[in-house]
Amino acid sequence: MAFCSLIRIFAVCWVKVFKKKDIMSDRLYVFDTTLRDGEQVPGCQLNTVEKIEVARQLELLGVDVIEAGFPISSPGDFNSVVEISKAVTWPTICALTRAVEKDIDVANDALQYAKHKRIHTGIGTSESHIKYKFNATPEEIIERAVRAVKYAKRYVEDVEFYAEDAGRTDNEYLARVVEAVVKAGATVVNIPDTTGFRLPGEYGEKIKYLMEHVDGLSAGKAILSTHCHNDLGMATANTLAGVLNGARQVEVTINGIGERAGNTSLEEVTMALKTHPYLNIDTNINTTKIFPISRMVSSLMNMPVQPNKAVVGRNAFAHSSGIHQDGVLKDASTYEIMNPKDVGIDDNAIVLTARSGRAALKHRLHVNGVDIDGERLDTVYEAFLRLADRKKEVTDDDILVLAGADRSASHAIKLDYLQVTTGMGVKSVAAIGLSISGEKFEASASGNGPVDAAIKALKVIIRRQMTLREFTIQAISKGSDDVGKVHMQVEYDGRVYYGFGANTDIVTASVEAYIDCINKFK
Image (cartoon, rainbow, N blue to C red; front, side, top):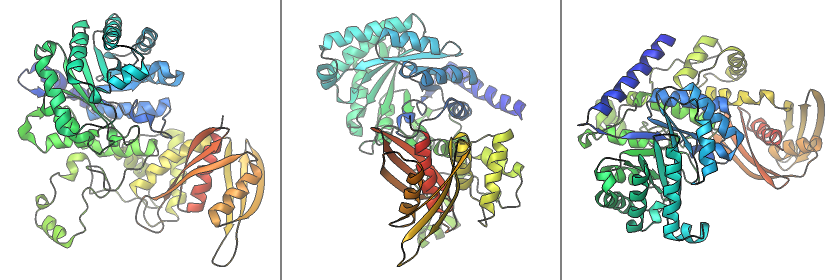
């Protein structure tokens, strides 16, 4: 198995080297920022082990650059960049900084083990950023940008510069900034539509203007990169407009996750190019790995993929209209522009039941991008058997939930039991048992419905001033016996904590989500 993986990685490397040498090919580099910009979604933070899992799958996917973190922001981010640098071989590992020398020093330290390293530094260039964020002049911003690039260049050859809020930056001034940083040694210049404001035509024109007015770009000294946000739902369209006008790197995330409405979706951009081969723009992405990594990221980050999400949503290849069904049965191309297998959707999945063994469970998790072994597999398998006893069939969504939920095993507060009496015309009453650092506690309470009663019983034991700010329930499949996910936000001591629970019983899932929040209290 390890030998096969080595062969696959060698093949990825060979293709990348071959394409770089082939000056006739129109090569588009894929810069994945799932582990940096994507991970900034509230409540979706990953630990270092989980980040390494994602990074290894990104390597197999074929991304060219992995933005592993913002090292100076926290010790955890610093350590993640260090460990990811050790864990992967072929992609360039990138660390984000501000245009500050200390940031760049720390980024360089974090990249010490990277086989291919890049420092990503930059500063805001729009009028509002210059005036209000930096209280500076346009000339001062250019000076700081150049100084940062030159300083980063002392450490690494590959330096990327980002012009934050470039989407709202005057094109003429932006061209001056880009030309200055390219002369200073930047190999890639990132043109972010930070606020997701631009229309595709406008963003494409901006890239075209820079390609025509910056000498270093036309001379091949640097390439332009897109970095688009989805505030108006146009991140993918804007990114493609940038590519068609000369950008040769795209900054994307798995499932389009990211701050606010998210970033450009890796799967949408790569499949748009694959389904339009006449554009003659190549990426190194192995598209058959898209669906597994999509599910993996969704599970690890406890962030559901909406059913109608392009390419990877549950309904992306579903047909309910009779006319559509008739057409697809006669010839799939009548209503499908992509073959599901091209994105890694396996129609011949092994069905998991209570009689399935560890090997079958491990295989299905592997197909979905999650590799576990040893004690962790044992823990997930035990939870799987308990679930399988209550269901006729365990779905991929179910086992991904189980693989993510097992992280609660180390929590100080655990749910021992929950019993709720409820019904029409009677007051809901809940009895709860908790284990807190090994000590047993019990309590009961009544409430306005089963969830309210259960949480009130929990609060009898956990005597803290806590306020429930958000409560979201998601049924991850269609059957009445399927696992439901609950996401919660609980405010405590002026901070908001995010929790997650999953169970076939939605009241239990709600209590588990609340306990997950409490376990994160500082």
